[in-house]
Image (cartoon, rainbow, N blue to C red; front, side, top):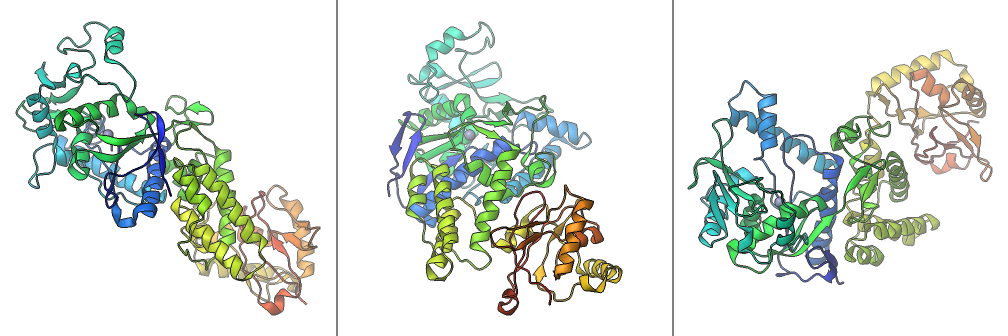
Length: 555
Ligand SMILES: [Zn+2]
């Protein structure tokens, strides 16, 4: 299958031909570790993880090298260190900030279902020449100076943009235009306003390394030139990142790498994901719509509930990576429903069989058309639902799972998925038993739980959950439930399914008795004998069907 990728540099979709198919090499700019990553930061993390998975699928898991750096030297980090750890020596304070933030990022990335990159180098390990001889920033800067591409001025080493005739190709910003538009005398020590910093001197209260140009620290761009060369060589296959990095960051990476190595390209394909908006507006702290990955996972700040990483991931992939994405609560709800329905199809015992649907892989091979791939997954899921049982259905379920895995989705069983829902929290069985016993003592004998077979997950605002409740309702019990509806109509519903004449009920009485206001019920199919006696379906209140279970009438 031919993989075609849109290349920002040539501005066209091109057939991907790796330099070495036994080692396909990709570099993606990673986080600057000074604070929690926001949801916009999650987009390249997810998008390039899908590309990583696709490349592994096409070339073999051992034949792809994916490098994503960690920027742990930056003025924002210094400022954060001084603010948060004023009592500590600067280096220690910086280490605290970067280690804590890098660990937060790793945990967010894992929650989003991403594979760890092959290498995650930290910038500070690549400032000075290394014992292992891998590329480093100081050596690169020396090479640039020696080659006439950089000069020292005003306490800085600057890249001389005029030394590179085709500077500006990636962003389409011609040097002359930049000169014409530049304000005069902004940086008097620069030969050209577009010249950028490779190295700058540090004051005593800034982090610094001893270099041929004095104690200082690298500019932002040089780290990626060094770390990509260290792991992927002077020229590699794919360089990725967000659209906002095209200029100046990627433009300057290209200038540094090409001029230091004397190559005509740095990477053969430049890929950029589009911007992210929140509910139709640019995300900003001042607008109050700034939302971090962690807040989505662990708080109810956005959309009134916590979201699993898998829901966030699916929501991100429903839009093509190059298009702008509008991050909305309704899109998250929709993604939650989709995952509910897919996990309903695959259930608990479906194994991936490696049979990836041709339509899914062809969609992804067309410049990562994830929305088409997802449409195809819907088709497979509905086909699987349409087959009553038997081998074809099992094969379809397996195909659904195997195909979704390339998108990093459906890697759990249904049970694991439900248990991983952040709105579902497991509580201890003893408390559940005590609550049930208390309820049993209060209600008429004909309503008591008799024949436990359904497993219920009840969830509530208290963050506690009744994990397993055995339910058995007789017909009279159902009528009682119907009455109980009036107690809290916005929470629960009872209705008769016209088609199957099954009762769709919520165990209102039970939820009330154990003190929960919102209920999610998951029940298991009955044993054959009791299944014949009739069935009823449990629905969740606020219109989200969690899982239709079956329930028999008591005799
Ligand atoms: Zn970079």
